[in-house]
Amino acid sequence: MPYDVFLSYKTENANAVREVADCLIASGLAVWFAEYEITGDIYDDDVAVQAAIDAGVERSRHAVVFTNNRWARSTYCAREMTRIQQRIPASRTIEICIPSEDLPRTTWPVLRGVPFIEYSGRLEDVVAFINAQRWFTGALHVSRPPFSAGRATRQRMRFGITMDIGPLRDASSMQTLLSERERRFPG
Image (tube, rainbow, N blue to C red; front, side):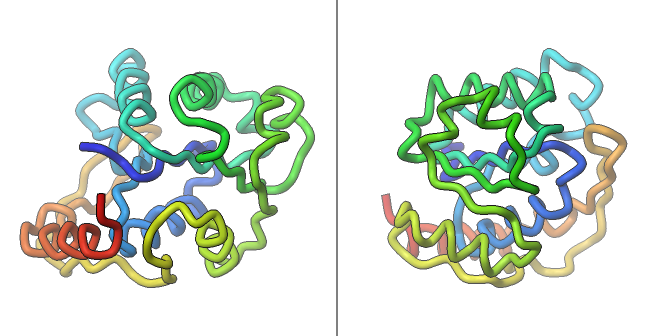
């Protein structure tokens, strides 16, 4: 599956990034977000996790990196950023600083040339920043994902995180999501 956006982040920032991921998904974009893509069957296998990350970057058209000093020190994030640099042009990469710190741009000089914003804690600001890049045909909006309540199915994810994936398995909700994506973001 091709992805519109790959999200690189440190696990400690997962709550903020999840909110952005859900908004992008609700807007019809295909988003590579580790919590949704690295499933319980591989979360203990570092080789499989890295392969999933590499495949996610390889199949993504844009990258949003959520940075701070912890992100810059992370081995996984370093591997992600290396792949992003190899695969996704800087013109299709943006940085969201959580908070703005020096180490990410010192470690990754390419970030000095990409648009960035400091995370304010407001999803609306992030959406406005992404819209300002004019990457997508339609404007993104702050909204909830169009998934039905569905049957609750919990799956253990990497780092001991548990996620309810039941709504993601509802075929009619997924069809609605895919139809909306095709309508709003052709090609």
